Each structure stands twice: as C-alpha cells, then as structure tokens.
Length: 510
Image 1 (cartoon, rainbow, N blue to C red):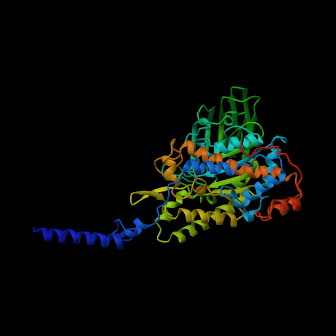
Image 2 (image 1 turned 90 degrees about the horizontal axis):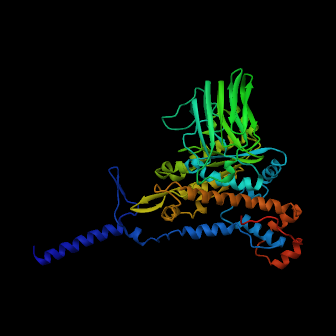
Image 3 (image 1 turned 90 degrees about the vertical axis):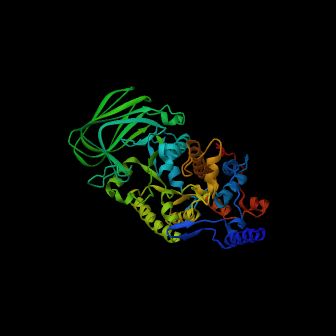
C-alpha cells in the first residue's frame, strides 16, 4: 500500500472514531439486548466528582454534635437552634417539632427509678446483622438511661452476633421472610422478631456471655432473663438454669395469648439455659440487666421493610404492650435498589415503594400505639459504571423520597446516606484504612458499622441534651428563641430573650 493511501486510511479511521466519540451517548447504546459503551465527548467533558475524603467527613460529622464549652445558656440555645435548623446530620423531625421525642425521653429517664425497662425495637436489613450498629446505640443509651445485656434474641439465631453466644436444640424455626431454605408456618403468628421457634414435647435454649473483641461491656451484664411465648399447652414448663441461681421452673396454664415470663437473678450470669417441656411458640428470649433501656436487634437480610403486615396483628399488639416498646426504628431501602435502578421509570418505581412502606408504618402505629417511630434511610451503595465506581442510579432520589414520606407520616428520619458523605462515598469507605466497608461496596465492616452507629447515637442524644436544657427554660421562651432568625444580632437577641446564667450538667462531646 502506498504511503499516501496509508495516511488517508489512518485519517479516515481517526475521523470515524472522533465522530463516534463526539456523538456516542454517555450512557451507552442498547442493541440486541446488550448495552454497548464507547468513550464519549459528553462523558469526558462532564464535571468529575471529587473523591469523598472520609476522614474529613467523619470529623465534620462528629464536630457537628459538639457544643463549644460555655457556661452561658444563650450560647447553648444558639447551638441547639442551629442544630435543629441547619445540621445535615440531625434526625429530621416531623413539622420540625423539637418536642417529638419528649415523651420518650421522660419515660426513659423514669425507667430506672421505677424499676422498669423500656425497649427500642431496631428493625433493619443486613447492615445491622451481628448487632453491629445497634450494639453501639445500645451501649450509648444504656450509659445515659441505665440497662444492660444483649437484650432480645430469637430462640434460634442463624447469623451469630457479637453480643452473645447462643444455641438451641429440639426446636423448629419458622420465619415470615427468608430464602427457600426457611420454613413458613401454617399461620401468621410470627411475633416481634418476624420468626418463632416451635417447641413440641421438649426443647432448650442456651446462652453464654460473649468474649467477642467488638462487643461492648454493657452487653456482657445479664441479670434478668425472660421468655416471650404464645399458644402454650396446659402445664407448659420453662426452667432456667444458670451459674448464679438454683433451677427455677415456671409452670403455665394453657393459653392462646402472648405470655412473658421472667427470672430475676441475684448477680450477672456467664451462661445459662432454658429447658422447656410442653408445646409453645417461642417468639423471643430477653437477656437484660438492670432497669433502663433495651435495644432489640432484628436483622432481616435481603428485606425491603414491607413484611410487617404479614404478621398477625394481635400477636404484635400483645407483644409490644408486654415488652414496653417505646421506640421502633426501621432501617430499609438498600435492598429495593436493584429493582429501582433497573426500572425504566425510576420515579415510578420509587413512588410504588413509598406506598408499600406507608402501609407498614401505619400498621406499626396500630400495633404499637405507645411507640415513637424513626426511619433510617439506606447507606450509599457502589456500582461500576463504565469501569468507574459510582453510586447506584436512583439512590439519591430514593433517599430524598424516603425522608419526605417519613416526615409526611409523622415519622422521624435519619439520613445515613449523607452522613457518610453522599454520592460516591461508599467507594471511599472501602478504600479507607482500616476499611470501613467491604469489597461488595454495599455493607459496612464492623468498624464502619460502629462508626455509623456512634453517629446515630450522638444525633439521638443531642436531642436528649436539648430536652434536658429546656427543663430549665420557660417553654414560651424556648419557642421564641428557636423561631428567632439566627442572623439577628446576638446582643439584641440576649436582651429580647433574657435568658439566665446556665451551667450545663452534661457534655455533647461524649
């Protein structure tokens, strides 16, 4: 081939490739069921998202919960006012009502003095498996309000947790949700943990104090053991055996209702077992300690949060009443992303999901009328697009829709997606050293889960700090100050509100 023809051939190829580069759509071209990709002008010239600096994000989040040292009530009020209105890491409250958690806080404060334990049910997907996030929240709140122990566990736990070691024998497990290997019951009395274990004749459940390096101290203190059961036969007997108490049998009359039986122990136990004779549905075992607050982890791997209406309403209502449940946390959304992201209409798919979740929320309000509800949105999720790791398409829109839906239904909302850094953050959590998320770009590592759990605890207890502060200020003055324009001159503000000297008895940085 002559040099001139070679040159023309090369130029023609370059022109062809350049034309394709300029006009080829950045999202690719669907042909014959496949999606073809080619480097495009739109893709190359679009603004490049900066990598999320995880350490900077986490530092900023933690600082956002800290109030500058001050013995002046005015400065404290300014911090809380700005926190309520502007802090992106806050728990969003319906109608911006800062009294939303007041009833809950008042009950938690009185739990210890009254010898009661109020419970927080923490439902979520695989992000809370192994009691990772919930264990941090439990430790922090029990430090505030008292209480101890790993709290509620199922009779049979298929995924080990960091907070307790358990075993069971001669029981059959049924679940309302799970893969093809799980059993479904001929009825819908699954109970508060979305599962139950049937004992027929004889069965036993044993537990041992954890030695896991990631476990918290409060989880290791067990001095109260309870069994939540239903549909028991006449003469059903449950006997607790442990290292601090002689065997104590509890004998029940026949009942179709939910029953809670409890053993108070003279000291913390290292291990114990509950031997059962007769027939019953075992909904849960409660491993608690001193009176206070309990955080009950219910991890539902692969769940989208739309299963609760499949559980018998009366069984749930009786259980929540017996347990003293005062807060229900629902953490879902991530498992719906594959369907949303692949949908031809992302908005339509999200709206459909919101309708389903609203049904679950209304159902929870019916079966637990004394409980406050908090919804936690999904974490960022990473997916490769054209060889580059980015956020799943539709996830930011889903997060925004979840917040709007929750607040519209009088449910508080915590925006985990933005707390961890927003779009593109999951990839950086994976790269972080030590790694804060796993190589699937979906799940946190133990370190990452506990970091997020700590942020949740700090956000929640910040509202408690504000609740405590407001006990010293007339409510009309609080309303006046919270509604005051933050930009208004501080001197005019102090003269207008006339707040007295104040020495905070608590720290926001703990």
